[in-house]
Image 1 (cartoon, rainbow, N blue to C red):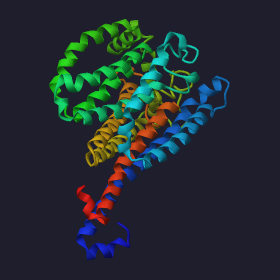
Image 2 (image 1 turned 60 degrees about the horizontal axis):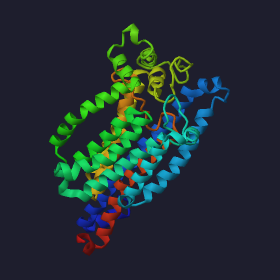
Image 3 (image 1 turned 180 degrees about the horizontal axis):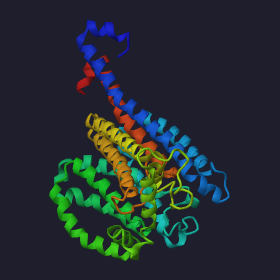
Image 4 (image 1 turned 30 degrees about the vertical axis):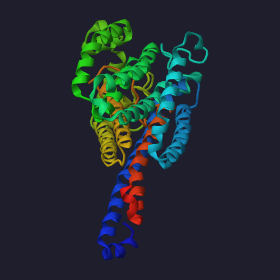
Length: 402
């Protein structure tokens, strides 16, 4: 509350309570901006340390990856500022367009005659324009917006399997099929998890998920068996000490060496050794390993705490959202960020099989960075839009009941 508002609050207790509410509501959004800024700044510094050797090894300057990530951060911050000012409720009107665009872009990555613009990179066709655009990242926000819009539109029908959950599964299932064809089985599971969280928060019955899970498990197992790299990762994770799986476990083994050598306080910034060609993708899928080596257990613990605070603020904003659509979008965004972050950390410390998920705000990748900043901007708007609504009600009490 501002100093000028204090005398008015004392003269009018009701107005004072509304002013305090507006101030308190703004704290969540402002705190989320601060946490995001810390993660982004730390991410740029960590990326430089983790990527400098690889950049020079490929004939570039040591700042090659840092510069590319920095340009993505600048664009992302601009988009963040724009999205944070756009009423989040408007996204419900464009949810179908977002989903349609996601389906088209994902289809382009798997068509046999589009290899010229979607060449295989590391065995998968996941990128457009030479690696600059990753449609599967954009599809994550499309799943959130579209699923939230459909759940709100269906209302009580979500309690019925055929009217509620199944139609949603058809559309998200189409995305899953194309992600599987890239192939990217981790993304298939991630889209399904995003959809399940939002639909469950919107009132779908838990029994429906159990029933569908039992039906689809045989199909998933067959697909997993067909994709050799998935089975190799699972079997390699289950038998980490088995010599027969040493090639599959190489990346995980080097990650554990990095994290273990960091000890409590780490080797120091820029002093990591595993990123000097020993640990593949130390600046991307395994950047958490570089953090563990250079910043130690304390660094990993602080990272876990920062994402926990980010998630706590996100769920606080979701709880107080002014419309059902915004509530579900906030839940979906917060869950997406939290699951991605903690899966990444779980992989680099050996608690989970290798998934290929990046660490939000920190891992190299401009598509993921833009997505993270745009989703944060939407969440900020959901948190701050309540401030404008309460403010309008305070100045126009007759409009409060409309």
